[in-house]
Length: 219
Image (cartoon, rainbow, N blue to C red; front, side, top):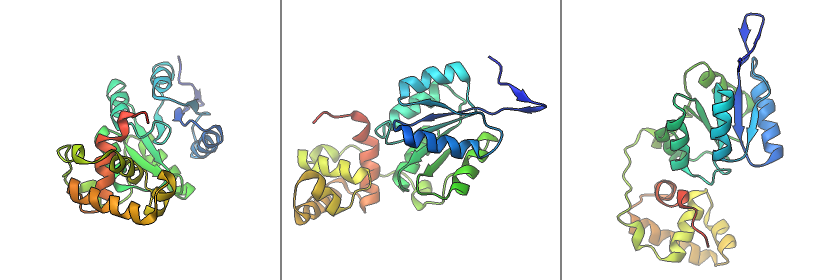
């Protein structure tokens, strides 16, 4: 299948993994606005993404982390299987722990839905040109400390709280989501930091992102 061209300029191809139709359409418009891109292929799962990559050989693959339920291991498998594909991870809001995880998985970029469009497009352009772009975040260059040794000591409720921390929830959001009081949410958060050895909520999110979120536990 030809990549196509307009005159002497090759048309670039992108693929977007996003489960929400409106978000897919919005991201597609941002990508096309970079210039030189055909209308992106649209998929909603890692399995669909793998098939579409084989079929269309995109220059850039944009993966919404929420749509894959923060399955960083699955993301790494996709990147490894189709190497050297260029992947940009899309998050709802900036999370240094998750940026570090997608970088470790082999992604070339990390953007958030609340970024300015120009920043988003600049990342797409940089990755399409063979480079990469990650926003400056202190944890990206820090060594990984967390291990699984302490996660098994958490109670079922503490594990639920840890998963909420992983997606960026504050204590009040955790309380509302789990139907507990704000004070109880704070107590659980303090216990999680103590038991896992995390120095702050960001490190706790890193632990959850690496060891809990990809498992798709049924509750």
